[in-house]
Length: 391
Image (cartoon, rainbow, N blue to C red; front, side):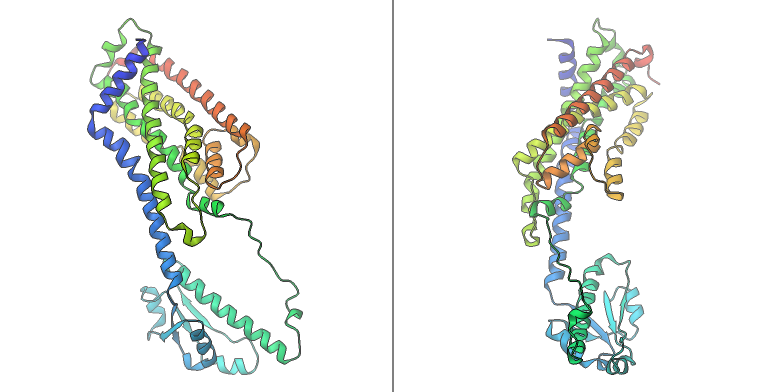
């Protein structure tokens, strides 16, 4: 057996013997992460559907000032209830999401045909009340538009006179593309899984063995250090790929269980899509293994290596955060940038968009090339004479 194969199987067996490491690598992060992510999305959908389907409860202060409005709201299924004595305090203490206050001057303004003021008491910083506030605002705007149309007709004026433009919303989105909104965090989670999946083995195989003083006996064998490093690096990449495969399996199992069809959304994450995502992300395992092994070889202790690698794992989040803050139109050159190209390609897959073969090939090819270059850097670090010396 080739020396690198011996080192490869040595690292795989040693890592698999550690049950805590295996559970941490393949259960807590790889399997539990997608399950929790799907559970949170499912809970969010259930809450939104529940709030949208149940009748709107609207506390009203001064309901006697606008009986026609109150009757119209009741006709639209709104449950009118008395407002608390201190409406502002009720909103601040989250006792109510929204309160409609009808001022005493409303009847006179209404009779005179002037713009009558209605007050919606809300707290815009409360995210849970956004849907309730939106429903109340939509109903009041609809009532105002209906009243304006009736006033124009009474005066013999066509409503089209004051509305010369009608905007027709022609939505080009598909159920698959809307599903991409739910899976917006999927690229980052998968890339993070690749980096985190091999992190412990990379640290233990170099910094850990240095502290246990078992690295020096390995290096003094009549075998090239490049082969020793190659075996360790490939073992790290293998665990990263295994973590990626398990994570995709977990996503493929959990997401079809979500009630997204009630929102006219389709989750495009079947076996074919998962296989394509795995093919695209797989070269990142070599990049991650090379970076993790280089950091572990550079660090002086196991604890120092863990600190550096924790910071290193944040790197995959950078493209996701930048694109979330400042969405950009994809350009051809972006498919040659690792991490950025993976973000774009995974988004295209989950949105059900057609893939361009040369873009996929460029992402895979350049990412593989970058991984090889990083592996060469790790090899040079393994040739340092003081590599096996414990701090």
